[in-house]
Length: 135
Length: 246
Image 1: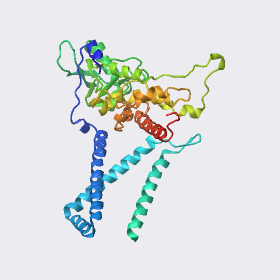
Image 2 (image 1 turned 90 degrees about the vertical axis):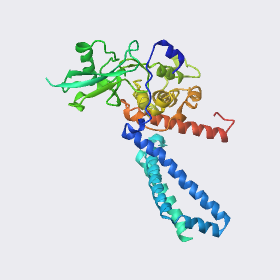
Image 3 (image 1 turned 60 degrees about the horizontal axis):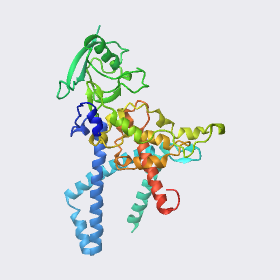
Image 4 (image 1 turned 60 degrees about the vertical axis):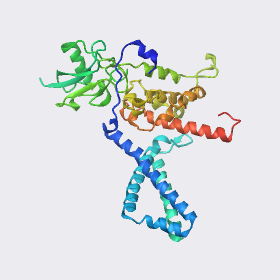
């Protein structure tokens, strides 16, 4: 609010509570979506560490893999997977709102945009799984 | 006759250092809306209560208030949806309070003007050349966003605006998008510096609550995200085609 506005008349500025995100279900789910990005980043970091270890040689990489065998690491990856899935699903569900795909004068149904996301996800994950599985 | 308790926020800038709540018992009828109840308070119980209202039919956008924590048009919220529980009516959140339930909307009005929500033409054609024709498909691209009644419920629901009032905000951006998408408009280049600024679309984190509370189903969140896509596409195109129109 600019100073000119403030000078017009006395007003009470409503404070924003630090716990505003607990005041409604939608705000809370939004915050969970935001926090889930941290877990996706955590996975990316662990993946980059793995690549770095691989570049250092087989012994280093094997040691890295062994360090992931602990119960704590296992539990961490389960938590990361849950948040990564939540992150993916919630962002995918927002895609049809953001992307309006037109073919001539016709608009592609939002459900098809959403379905395409899941199909591409499935194809990429499947391809990666086949690549790793057959190597 | 049954009664319902309406608790309203009171604030007199000349007497009070901060707002407080005051409860009133109001006759309850099934067909009454919250605005009827606070009008009853004003007319029959306490004439000092201040609030804005006008059309009583969800068109003017004047009677936006926070009803039990949710931004609503009070002319469109029925008492029966809350009865027999108490209803708490507060001013719209995120705006300064002038008195009781009346908020200072000047920040929104300034921002609205800033985004130039009107038809901009490079050159006006003479009337003798006839009207600007538009196909139903071209109309469909912006019609939804033209339904905004400037009620500011979206600003009250937006935590980004609550945390940082420099954010241009949902309704103003939705209205800018409405004109950007209009085939008759040529003002995108004039709006882009405002919409694409740090206080514009990039500040939005897609909470989406603006669209949830919109009484006219405008979907400002969609307008903001689509503007992001459009501006990103324009930027990428200007990188690979720098001598063309950015």
